[in-house]
Length: 258
Image (cartoon, rainbow, N blue to C red; front, side, top):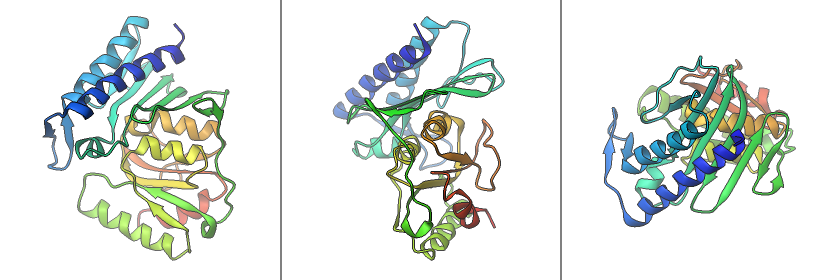
């Protein structure tokens, strides 16, 4: 099987598991922070993804949010978030996704983001563009913050990072942006940038599985990604800024950490 077929099969298998738990209910647990949630849905979805990948490519490595912790230095690396948007999932909000990225020597080759509740697929392959279901997508043409709708996210930190995010939102509103949206699922937020619904997105702490697929979607759709201080994002926990490219420097002026 080709990597794209494996990624789709893995995402669909995990999505079926998430749908079943979403409809029947599941007991949520907390991780290190009292607002950082996890459940059997996350764990079993990741196990299903790993099983599909390992059956097709037994020598490939997997980095996942829950159980798989292979090195980002691996030659062939799958970076997996089995349930992006766990808090939405826990509260019965049908806005969450399976996110799967495939990297070769640290370079994104494939990204798949799948919302099983709406059957929305976002797929990108290096050099082949980005797609929403069967439609090619492209970033928005907004050239100024005053015509832009932006997205953001809040990490589980309720201290300095939360205050920094709120301060950045205040600065952006002073530029007469059309609005800020916080949907709670970074992979789908990035897909919205890629498809032109949002002109940009920023968050101060994202993990690789949050953006591994979404960054390729944006780049293949004609946009730009960086850290919030303008550097190339590492495959590590990092700040993340994604835009249509036209307004990237404008956004960075207001989201750089003070």
